[in-house]
Amino acid sequence: MLLGTEISAALTSLEPYDIDVLGLNCATGPKEMSDHIRTLSGLSPLPIFVMPNAGMPENVGGHAHYHLTPEEFTRYLTHFVKELGVNVVGGCCGTTPEHIRQLAKSVGQCSPKERKYEFVPSASSLYQSVPLRADNPPTIVGERANANGSKLFRDLLLKEDWEGIVAMGREQVKGGSHLLDVCTAYVGRNETVDLKEIISRFNRQVTAPLMIDSTEAGAIESALQQIGGKAIVNSINLEDGETRLEKIVTLCKRYGAAVVALTIDEQGMAKTADRKLAVAKRIYDLAVKTYGMRPHDIIFDALTFTLGSGDEEFRRSAVETLEAIKLIKKELPEVHTSLGVSNVSFGLSPSVRNVLNSVFLHYAVQAGLDMAIVHASKIQPLFTIDTKGRELAHKVIFDERQWEGEGEKRKVVFDPLVEIMAYYAGQTTTKTETPHDAGAAVEERLKNHIIDGNKAGLQADIEEALNSHAALEIVNTILLDGMKVVGDLFGSGQMQLPFVLQSAEVMKRLWHSLNLLWKKSKAAAKERW
Image (tube, rainbow, N blue to C red; front, side):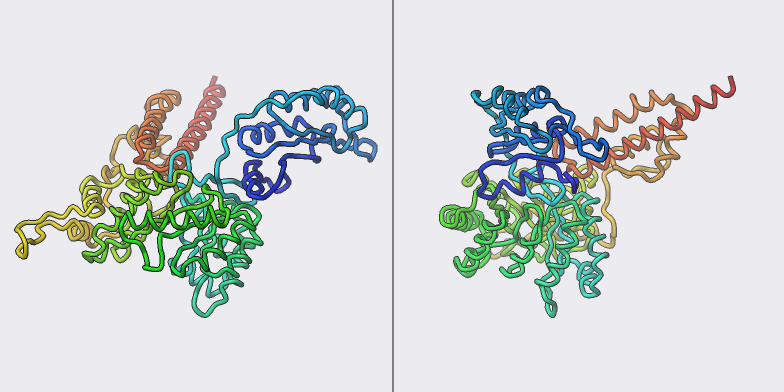
């Protein structure tokens, strides 16, 4: 389409509305529509129509000319009906009564092929669609465009540096975020005005779909009116009973948005897994059965508390959250789940937070988490965290303290929270399992470039490797071995998709460099000959 919109993004944006048929008309001929129709055939729960021009228009003598004959036009559209299950066909620019007569004769009495589609609940921007559950979860929601959670964003907001905020949004997407959370609620500023300004810019200049993070119905509606795709609203709860839930869910229905639901009711934040599930079920019944939300457009956030305070009341909060995710996915299988992952480590040092957040996210995904609100660049693949740090984080999350004595004399003799803080004390970066020493063999360095997604020093290492290896040997024995390691880590859940993409980008660059150097050496040899 003219904006470069993916056909799946158009489907995601339009599907929530009460429409009868979805498809394409005008602009191009049937040949150019084929890939889009094939995509719709495999994804759309709605009947499909196709109404193309008689070919791409050509300028002939100052007039638009359409080159497809009635026979050619009919052949394309008959294929759409009989092979792709298109329900409604017709002709747009350049078609004549004869085009339509032959089309009607060919397909007017036949039934479309029965389609087997797989609809994927998603969010979308003007440009692309993002599944609420990725093939290899989680779907990552960037958390930095939040006036209450990011000092940098707040400073940019106070200076009204809109271009700086757009750059921050783009940086999150580049860093691996699939969607962006946007919150402009800040004391002394007009939330609605700020949100409108940022949304208008993100809508045009950032490819990722948006999550509107607000408690104000007016601000939410203003944002939803601007967003070209399908947004997510964060959030609803039962803190004041049904009052606010009704307002927000009604807006989500009107503007085709999904909604995040927090496990909070009149008693406050639910702390145990059973209570979290009970609140989720109550919200589900209201949102779905009373107000007509579709289950797949509800995203439950089971919430977690910080483990960093050491408060006895919250020592098992991470365990309860993980168990709640499992229960929600079991009892309400059509809904999605989300979590503000970094809440689990609030108050701890940056190095401890990075490790604890990364390990907690791993277990949350195992429990069934679909979406994670995180600072994507601060999440580490498990294999990069050293063994002791990983084990201590596990023990903190699952409250594996060790005790001795009984009754009043019972006391803690091993506290993993104290141990992990001591282990990372004074560090500004996280310890890694296998530090990649600059003195390692060039073969190992090249392999580690791929595994780590690290481009620094890439060209120098390639040139050094070519002194002792043929280009094809480097590809077959070093680079492909590195990609195999990446594939194994991805398959076992120790590496998330953004890191895989970084590795793929390094592989692509390595291949490009090798190809250029090989051509250069070949040309030099030819010149010598």
